[in-house]
Length: 438
Image 1 (tube, helix red, strand yellow):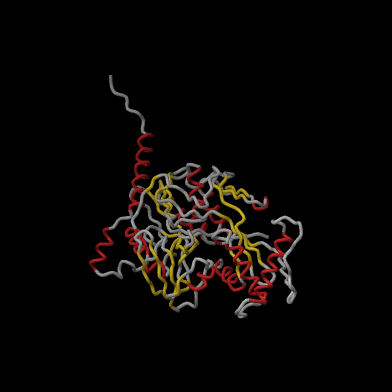
Image 2 (cartoon, rainbow, N blue to C red):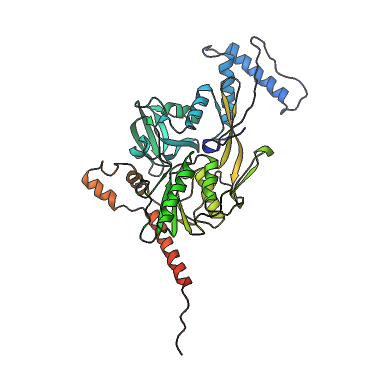
């Protein structure tokens, strides 16, 4: 049975048996088999394995188990940034992640251009409160350089630990070509999936009857929390909605589908996946009760920190002209990984397909381009994240507090202005034409 997990992971079953006879010397193959044949290649691999095992100068950690694991990690690591061989410890850690609570810094990271890059800081987390931004590259952990040869799992393992313990990380911020070092205390990461404009769960409408909902992540409760928010907004006579997906790193595919279908007619294509194996090809369609907002205007806010499931929702609503997308280009994480558990407790995480929007635009490494581009500076983004953090502004001295308060959320303001104009136009277009008296 398959189940879509965090960032599009799927758990399926696979049995993989690797047997290498200890003490058996394997010679190079001189058969006429082609260079790409499995027999010739495995002979070559066995030859190298045995030579390393018996002749390398330092015999420390030269067990067959260690060498095979290293070889598999090297092989999978050359494929793409999201494929990875997980030892038993890493696989258990991945399973812990899907339960929505773990000890860490609250930084969603991915490999990008060979660097461990922050996709988004989770709201109310240690990384969020410290001011770490989307796009920051983690270059040192506890003073040790993060090597390009390291896997993403290895770096994540260094970042995590027991709640309450400290870790020092150094980031490089490409936009300003500078480095910053933070000492952070690990914590249990828990978060509300859906919040209102004030970081609460009250969901007021503004004087123009424009509602606002911020989805922080697509977890198990996202669809239910959004449903509750929409009920409160509609009870107040909401006429238009701002759906804020900025710094949303993604989550469960099923939740992305359930969120999208709240605004679409039943049967509408939401997202499709395509891979080499026909079993990975699928099409997800709306199975709800139709558009819950009855066609009311929607603006979706996105930025570089919007990834994975957030991009699926954005791309779908944009493709179908159900929403106007405002902000900056999204991260571009639109591939499907399958998790293949192995007999010894390890697992293989392998990219098996890519996501496509309803018009068959690929998300992976392309991202979603907004309809209206509204850039923000690093300072503006940092201030906005600080305003979202509980007690963030109150922690500043008076001078900096006044400076921060004066900085506006220009993307949100553009969305509000756009919806006010559309609502006004809609009201004018419905008024009867006045006929001049003769």
